[in-house]
Image 1 (cartoon, rainbow, N blue to C red):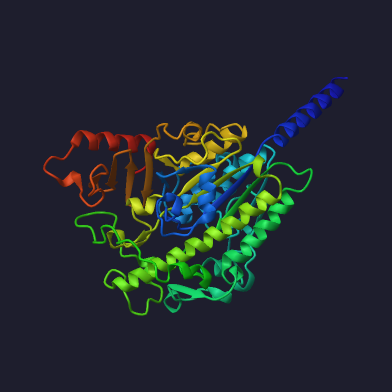
Image 2 (cartoon, one colour):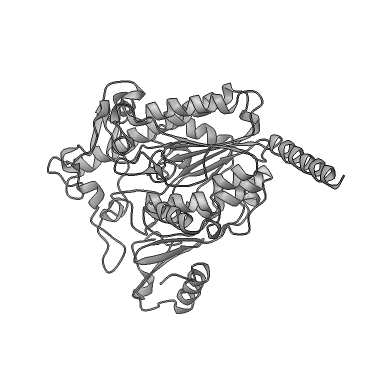
Length: 476
């Protein structure tokens, strides 16, 4: 009799959990690589981004969203775990090794958490650092998952690019990177979307979306990773056409900073074939680089549009939360940097847009300071999935309900320094104790280090360093 009662209670519990998950909204997470806020809806009127603009018009664009690290792997670690983490691109693989040693000591990832609560979890393209989410020499070794126990399916059709490693730095018609100096830093070839890597991976995303929205399926958590505008800057010629003769605005503060900063010599960019030209010394070449970056943004926008259109066709658009997230910014000549990897505003600020059914005041943007760390608890809050105790961010529901609500300071880091962005200032502290302090109320912003001035605001500096140490207590 007791055994019967136990089985009956278990059946009721399972049926209740199934019913709860069935009533929950789906999640569509779109991750775009190296996308700074170079979008019409973020104030760049010369950029053609109609699909992302439409998403912003029906959701909430966060105009001051900051990532935790100005590099793909470390930034995606935070997105997918809700935790501060190592500053390197190998952060998620390091976590996977920890799970091999003691899985119970490692908190579940965001997709694992949603999977535990009844969601079908699928990733397509570059969601974690390695496209397709695997390790090995060509990033396709099934025995080396980047995020163990997270995805029901994680897929990447490599097409003519042979394997995920080839897809990651692919140019038109299957050209893969062998030696970067032999690969052009930008390219624009006539053809349809499928001649570049995103075209075929988004085809797969549409197939997965069709499967996930078939009758009697559980709620889904679908993550779609779009590669462009990652280097090399290659996009079909039709996306370059709007920028052929466009007059671009001048590059703000293009000079190399004086004094100690997190400036670097743009090694990722400079290693490609540049035909002997340097954008810091050749204005015409700098303009061509920026035009090709813009073409890649418009190509990426077209892929976003394809996914959103298919979501609407499935009839699930009114039951799906959509998040568009850029994994970090990208300096296009500001501070004489062409790339990411620095702790300046241009490398740390990226687009974040969230749309959910029946949201208040859709289309109004917010200037509240937020960070990538907040995405995990926000999605839990919006779906009714419990917010786990281990996440280190906070739900953005207040800003989603009222765009004028207050944000909160954002932390970021790289190997040799940490930084905090408040509503008015950015402070960067190097591991040797050197401090940079920039006042964003001043038009000079991140070109004048207030910490080296005669009227150095020591009290503010100590307050901000204290905030960093409180948030990152185990850092150097």
